[in-house]
Amino acid sequence: MEFNQENRSFRTPVTVLDTVAEQLADVDLTLPDYCPDIEKILKCTLVPKIQSKSLSGGQLQVDGYCIVNVLYVESIKKTIRCCEQSVNFSQCFSVKETPDNAVIVTKTKSEYINCRALSPRRLVMHGAFSLYAKVYSTAEIQIYSPDSDKNVEVRRTAVRCADLTSFCQEQFNICEEVSVSDKPAIESILRSDLSVSLSETKAVTGKLMINGEINLKMLYLTDIESGETGKIDYLLPFNQVIDCEGIDENTINCVACDVMSYDIRLKNDVLSEKPVATVDVKLCVTEEGYVINDETVITDAYSVFCASKPEFEQLKIASEVMPAARTHMEKTAVKIDDGKISRILDIYADYVSAEKSFDEDGLKINGKINICILALNEDNMPVFIERSADYSHSASVGEEFNAADCVEARAASISYRLSDDSTIEIRCELKISAFAVKYDTLKAVKSVELFEDKPIKTDNCALTLYFAQEGESLWDIAKSHNTRLDILAEENSTDKQTLEHPQMLLIPKI
Image 1 (cartoon, rainbow, N blue to C red):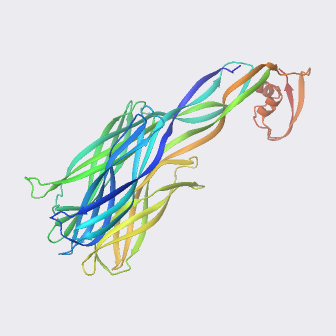
Image 2: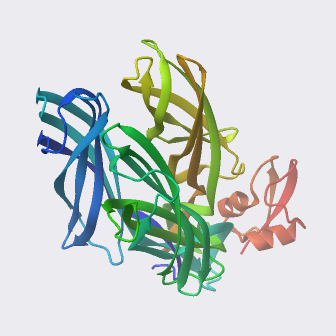
Image 3: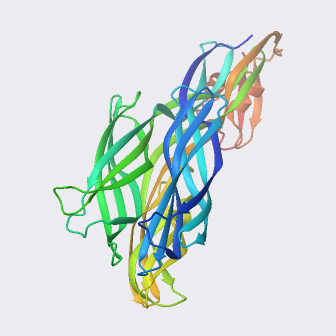
């Protein structure tokens, strides 16, 4: 006979797909007529961008393009130029199940790019990048509760459960015109970088309101003839309202905003002497909303009248969830081994990694910063320098947290100074974001089977004396003697679940 139980549940995110695929990018590039010949290649980069992602019929389709950019020294005036070409890609992943309201998270990472000059005007490039894809769904974790059957004893354990009440994702575009204002005019863009950060999120019933900033950084030519360069560091504030079923003022919201792709187009404004740039950005916002509830879980059960067999399952429950955002300052020095630096044109971090770990001090974030420096040497010739710097950050999130999800780091700003003509001192400000989680694991009763044809045999003693040892559990004593826990505690005038010292107990019979 099955022991009747009343089902309760809470929701949690589950990973349906977690995979990575390598994408190749082969480019045969011939310089357009308006570009001068190549004398020396400074830097070749591969930047993947995602245009769309969709899940249908057990297939996850991800489409996008990657831009191969070549920064070089031209052969006539020895100034900096660039050329680029885009390559489309499409990747399909098989998903065993297609959940309703699935959340898709995609990331890209450039792995390598090799460039070979066949002539001063023709390049052959071979590169690859990794496409990471995750599909999340929601699962209901059942919590079983007994009915009022007095024939079965149950041990209850109080736990806190983070119930996933909302799980949504939305993509949207932001288009903005960027003016150089009082800076020199833009003739040609050499390098661009765009990042996004959220400054505020607010939830109301069924809606999530977000405020954030898009940070666009550009290095560009102000005069093609002389090769003079200029820089723009532009902040674009934005706000967006997203529909999120199940969200309200009481949810703990873990929100991530990613740049899927962006495009920069130069246009000549007839009413202005300086060209302006139009920036078109595609963003993707993912939200997880939790409500923390106090629940009671049955961790053991037995019958006082017949043989019984509880069935157990291991529950992994998130009991606390907290968004965590930190700022880290990393200082490093770059020594130039060959030659001297007369002027720095641009300095940036093209990649920042982030790996999480936990120790007795809490959450640790470790990673590498790849620092790129474009400068002029003592002969006024452009040079390109790359250095990798390690960083380590201790994020104080509270002793109770033992895990972290969605850990990311980005370089918000880089400042520098030339301590001498061959040493650059660098300060890099990192913005680190993560969701701190506390997970508890416990063995819970899933069901109880009663064997009514196997009654428990009892002796004729109305009372049994038992000498209990220090540290023994009152529950284990009651279970081993087939008696009720409440009657045992009442008979011995104790409310201690674990005995603090050896003592004689009276074991009542049912």
